[in-house]
Structure formats: C-alpha cells, structure tokens
Image (cartoon, rainbow, N blue to C red):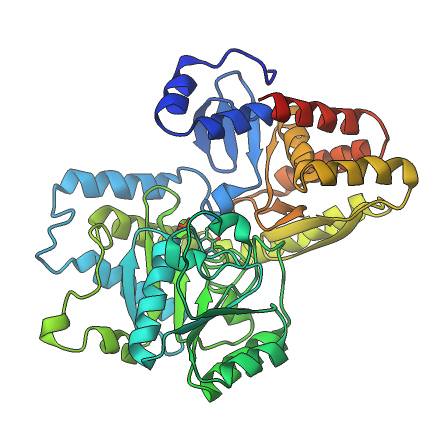
Length: 453
Ligand SMILES: Cc1ncc(COP(=O)(O)O)c(C=O)c1O
C-alpha cells in the first residue's frame, strides 16, 4: 500500500463530509486500511493482514475487541425492548452499575454520576467540586490530558489543543506533576475547588509518580479544603492491575472519573464516582433534582455494557493478568532494547507502558534526528509507528503530549506469544532506526509528502 494510492470511495465520502485532514494523515502514515473484523487483541484487514493492537483505542479495549459476553449482553438488552432512555423513570441498571463501581472503588466513594465520555466526566467533576466547595479555582498538573471539551481543555497546559478555541475557563492554574512544593503553594491560597490529576499521566509520556507524591498530594488537598479528583479514564478498569490505580497507593479520593474501557469499548459511557456529600451538594433539594444530567448518561445499553464489562474483567482475572503481563512486557522490552542508545527507558505499570526515546549521541544519527525534530517534533515517533504498522502489523501510537514516547498498552487479554511478537517487532524497528539511511530517508519522504499534501 502506498501513500499515493487512489482513495477508495468510502474514504472520499468521509473526507468530503467529515474530516479530510484525518484521511490525509492516515494516508501519509500508510495506516488507512479497511478493517473487516476485530476480535480480542487482533484486527483483521480486508487485504488479509492480521494486526496486533497495542494501543487499545487509548485504553478502551481492556476486555479485548468485541468480547462475546459483552456483545451478547447488549443483544439481550436490545431484545428486551425495554426503556432504553425515558428521562422520566428510575433507570434501575444505572443503580446497579453505580453500586458495582462504588463497591469496587471503595473508600468514601458512594455515588455515581453517569455521562457519555471522559471529557464529560471531567466537566461533571468541575461542576460538582465547585458546588461542594463554593470555590471556583481549578488546579491541574502540567502536560495533563483531560479531554477536548472547553472545561477539560482549560485543564491542559499544552496550547496545541486549545489554540483557536479560547477563551478557556478562568481561575485555572497548573503545577508540575510531582512537585509537592508547587502544589502546596497553590493550595494554600484556598482558592481551588479541586486538584484534578491523572494517577499516571498517560499522554504526558506514561509518567508514573511516587507513592509519596500521590499520598501527600491527597493529604495537602484535605488540609486546604480542595477536592482530590483522580482522572482514571485511562488508568481505571484494571488497566494497571488494581481496579483503580489509586488502589496501588491506598488513596481515598473525593472523586474518580471513569470512561473508555467501562463499556467494553462498544458504547459511549462515562462515570464520576464521588462521596455522598459531594453528590448531595448538587442534588440538595427537590427543586434541584435534575440540575445536572446528560440525555444519554444512564441509557440502558451503556449501563448493561458496563455491568457485563465488570463481569468479564473480574471473571477472567484481568487485573492480576494486567499486572503479570505488564511485568513480562517491560522485562522483555528492556532486554531486547538494551544497548540501543536512542532508547532512554521502558516504564509503566500493569499494561499502561511507554518506551521513551532520546536524541542519539553519534553524529551520523544525531544530525538526521535533530533535522526531523526541527521539521516536526512528532516525526521520529510517527515513522516508528508507521513502520511497526506497515512492516510488522502492530498498531500503536506515540503519546499525545510527549512525542518521543511510544505506547505499549494492549488489551488485558494479551498472551505471552503476542507480547513476544510485539517485542520482536519493536526491536527490529529500533534497530533500523539505529542504522543511518533507510529509516531516515523514509522520514524525509514523509516530510515531503506532508509538505506537498
Ligand atoms: C486521562 C484522560 N482523561 C480524559 C479523556 C477524555 O476522554 P474522552 O475522549 O472520552 O472525552 C482522555 C482521552 O483520551 C484521557 O486520556
């Protein structure tokens, strides 16, 4: 397949009617293929390729693609012809899912507010924390990714995402992830309703904090009356081993945002878990019984999918499996990539992992590396992604706010054999990148095609 191939008519309709630049980008990366079927960790293309998914739709497919239990649960729900969404009744399934989620989450989390995406969950956390504290300031960590609605965007320091969409929410401030001093300095102003933070910063390059940072951050929030809100949109649902990454460090947050993997990757869903007191601050009287809601938030299909997904995750022991397979993956990657000077580190927890690259020291590699960085900081990582996909049939991506980190986040159902295939493919591509020539001329070709576009 080449980047200049004729665009099939279905792409043309999408390009004309939805987003032409997305189609251009996929063509440029030679990743515009048609998928016929997706099952477990594998994606089957119409031209006969079998692709290993090490991206999981950015941590959506924890249970693997189209898990039969979840598919059956959705079919059963449709066959019931029940009230999918009346907006005028008590949706029982939402009660059951809220119970299941809060019992698993533990601590003081007793209620859930449902929505349809991670960003909407962040918006919910903003509103509820303001209502509870009667403060309007919002604190977040630098390089965070919280979603692309205006409220969530206001909690992201990288201007790439917000440029042209301003003004953002007033009263927000950022602190470096990991700095307790900076956090305390801000919290001490007592202006902030919430500190909203990812327990492991995913798009920032799989940044794993110390237990001390997370535990002290929580204690400082308590001391200064700021809600400690964890965005577990990528880290939740057993992705890092425990149900929540918070459990690893014994945290007891005021709110937790979940989305993505909660519905088995099949229907949109989001949930914000919170204390009873926070929930009551919004739903505090009959008059305010529906002051916060979202049309599709508690719809039967999403709730049924959530319940079935939890069943699969627990029944198949996918949390312990994520922990074990993650250790195996990191150990094998570290061994296979030892000695390659551009590999800085392999890091992560459970099955949320990253391979961090750095500039080479050898002049013959450093010159093209810096040249391409100058053309576009994502160029090096994107050529890696392209070669893994095209030549080794592995799907992954670089982190959205840290272009030199390649993700390794497969479904939690991954097998040892699939891990070995991934590690061998990454090793090959890294070896190619360490030879002057081919890899870099490919990058040059990509830069030219992007410029000619
Ligand atoms: C940590 C985190 N929070 C929030 C979001 C936003 O989720 P959504 O795309 O479902 O709105 C994302 C999306 O990638 C995310 O990674």
